[in-house]
Image (cartoon, rainbow, N blue to C red; front, side, top):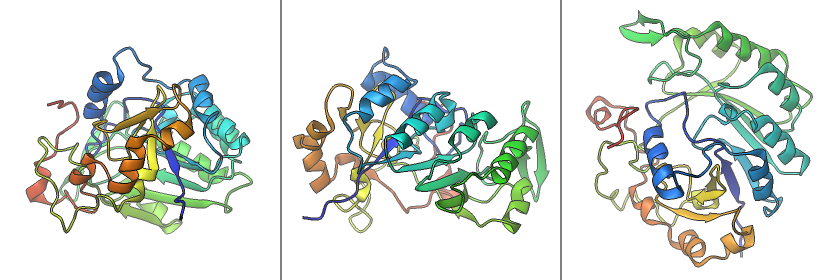
Length: 302
């Protein structure tokens, strides 16, 4: 029997101040209160993180890239260091928001499996790196938000202070859509991947449509069922698309990893997929003019 590698995505906080328009944060906040509990922690503590790791085998990778910018939780640097010291393989994906220079110096020598820097976009409405108060100007017929000196400073700081492990793990600069025009110079020195977005299993849409057609349906054929998302209270949701928390599968504070893996629900989903998978539009673009208006904008809960 082939045993697929399992990764856990870490969501150390509920609610993200980046308020990217392609990310259904309002849905996540609302459903967390409804389905996890209004009295549950929305900021993961280091103690909760350690409790969850106490039952997690070392072959399970940790991806700090869940439903939120990880450094918006001030204890994330300590979580990274603790996980690394315990021997876990770590991926970090950050917009740099919330990251302090002192924190970078604490974690920079971690031998990350992958390090992803999510840069500001010129295509989508975001608050990544944006100057406060917001200043807007026009460029090539589009409205653009000015980036802050603090953002430039942090980006330059991590490039100039790479640490002993730099070059031993994959460094990836990327953005969603096109790169912010003020960052074009970066492409002269690094490759910057420009990625597209999807509807997050229709969680970003104003109203869910019908199931995806059979030729596009990946239910039962997606490795994401082996990449669950750890929430602040220890709950595990299905995958990176489950912002509506339709499939909460267990809790590592209340049970062990073995109990989670051997539950009938988890075994069935790994074999057959989940109902949410029928609405997953991974690879289906929503950035053309006709479909763009179907998106829910930040702050709309209905």
